[in-house]
Structures are given as structure tokens and as C-alpha cells.
Image (cartoon, rainbow, N blue to C red):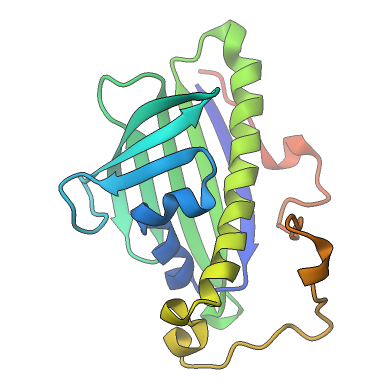
Length: 197
């Protein structure tokens, strides 16, 4: 089994980040490999619900079914591939409030079962890249989403949203900005680990 852990901090309260994690139709806006996503049968994300996705995997469209194992609002979301699907992948998101609940830390774990020994290194590299990309894309999505009138964070939170003191205008830096994250400056093996069982 492969287990990969990644931690990233957000300048948003847990409910805002959790709201994005459970807004399934919006997945394609911040997960570049997701072409379409929906909750099977409609309704909100809830334990036992199935999230159906069309993903781009190695240049091909693939249908993926994820079952919601745990859904504790604003705290924990655990997903696992549906029974019988291969490879068996799990995703776990755990949010912890910090700075009096105005910000949060996201612990993101991905597990992979049934990975052949010869493919473990490649699978670990691909999953590690995907975890980092998803975390940073979620950060960018939250910034974009908070600027839209229907998602105004100042109205949701009841406080005005002001730029951080000493902040820098990144608009002129181009379309890709590498934000800071909790793992920045650490060696890869400090934030990612593989457990073989």
C-alpha cells in the first residue's frame, strides 16, 4: 500500500474550504484532470453518496466512481473508489481551524492499494505531483471564487476581507503564481511518505 500525506494552510475558515471540497460540480474548475463531476442521484455530499467523475488519465477519458465514506461538515471528508474499481484509491481531507478559526490547515492523504511493486515508484511520483497540484489549485480556486459576487467572502464571514499587510499585488506576475504552502522549503520525504504493507 502507498500512503502519501501533504499539509497546506489556507487563509480561509474551515467551512469555506470544506464548501469547495464538497461542491462537486465545480471540481473541473480547480482539478485540471477532472472533465465533469456530479453526485449520483443529486443532493449534497453525504456518507454513502457516490461521486461520479470523468477524468483525463494519461490523455484518455476515464470514468471514476468515488464513495463518500465520511463527511463531517467543516472537518473531515473521506472518499474511496467504488467496490470493484481498480486501482483502489482513497482520499482523506481533514481541516483544523487556526488563528481563532479565521484560517485553517488541511491535512490531505492519498492511499493506493493493489499497486504492483514495479509500478510503485511511478505511482508515488504521479500521486505526489497530483496532491501538490490539487492543493495549490484549490487555493487559487478559493481566491477566484471569493471575488465573485455570489461567493463574496466578506458577506459569508460577516467581516471585510482585506489584503494582508505587506502583501504584494500578484496580478502582474502572469497566470501562474506559486503560492506559499506548509510544505515549502522541506525535503520531499518530510511531507510525503510511502508505507509498504
